[in-house]
View 1 (tube, rainbow, N blue to C red):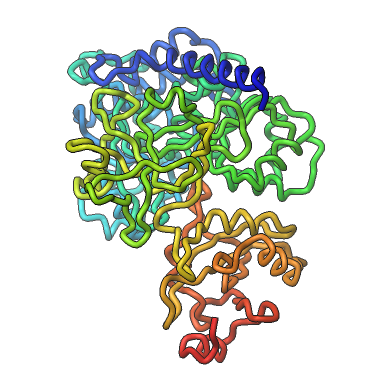
View 2: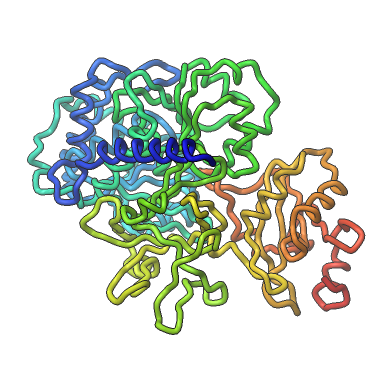
Length: 597
């Protein structure tokens, strides 16, 4: 890079950073300004503009606020007090956002439940929510009923879209129509501060049962404003939303890009790859939120005229793999991709402001002092940051992989860590005495690397990386390599134990086109990956199990392993001469050592 290019890049970064920082600088933990105060000020500025766009029409800011006010009066009528929790079990709909906004006006916390949950998982999330009331829609009644006999606490259900409501339940829609639409007195929340809880969200549950994480008003307001500032959103923007509203990426970061700046949110029930560009064109969207696998699905679809005639100027999200990034941007002609990194409850945040393909963010070396992010050298055997003879951790060198950690500062909105409902789970995420006595850092559980220019790259989840042949294998890097082969639609990589071998052998669950060339795939894998990183086993699936935000679930896959008596999908073994169908006799030979790997 030449001198002028370098200076131009650094000037752009500094200018953008200062602008974005200025937009969120007012958010302070001890402030009396809470999320509903912020949102009411936005409503007052844009009352007659549309804030939500659906198949049935538009909802103005004034109508949104009026609905939220009725919700607040409903909460008061139920005797709910500041600090009480109401669980929301709803699919994507504009009322979702209005309901938690309304509850926040009287200090009531909303627990946002994943609407895909059923049975024991749903009961677990309801139990740990601390809620005494649950709002749900009729479409989810069967799912709720599947959890009812497993819920250990008293739960008062109120239904949307069902009149009359089932016996023993309240009719939310009917009661709401009779309540006033004026704003409740601010006295109901006057004693609260921005450090107090506004929402409860849940971890994704990819490695076990979800954990509940309280989100303070500081964090909610930060998420509602940081990305709207980053993409310079305004009243003319329309955010196309297909991600679930119970998750922070869609429900706060994406929502904020619209409502915090007077723009509109196009609310869709779910993602459809085949209809995506037609709907983007029909609703005249200018922005959309993504997760990486969503982009992979779109790249895999046949071309459509609508994809060449859209108004999208910026997309924002996380998890866009390098093997998809350039293909996606070039095919769909996206001017700007703003990839970011962060966890709902965490304090490590990175943003790729200049759209460098594959990077999840950047901290220039000359600005490192302004951020709380470090990469700690990692001890794979201990599954913890490596400590030297002096007992302290070591910061990584450029291009060295380490665990991302964030220094905890309770007095800084960006660097706070509120933790989880369960204090033991909270303590597990805190690294003490990392670089000096008395310091405390949030452990992300993610392995990243940083180059000499300060760009960060995602490598893998700590629990996903495994050792094979005395080498560390990144499931993410292996999946990226496999995903570059034509016909591979999804690659979910994980390690499985094989009797008699230390570590774990690689296994990949693949969703492919029906006519995929397996001989060519094997040659590609052997050419792209070192011997220790090549999957020993393949599992060919029609579809893969993901969370509501398209993250791969691996727990069940690891448990099932490569046993053909358990796995009904076709299994392949990478033998010396090619892929061989893994049948019971071969499975036995591998396990008793007759067949060597």
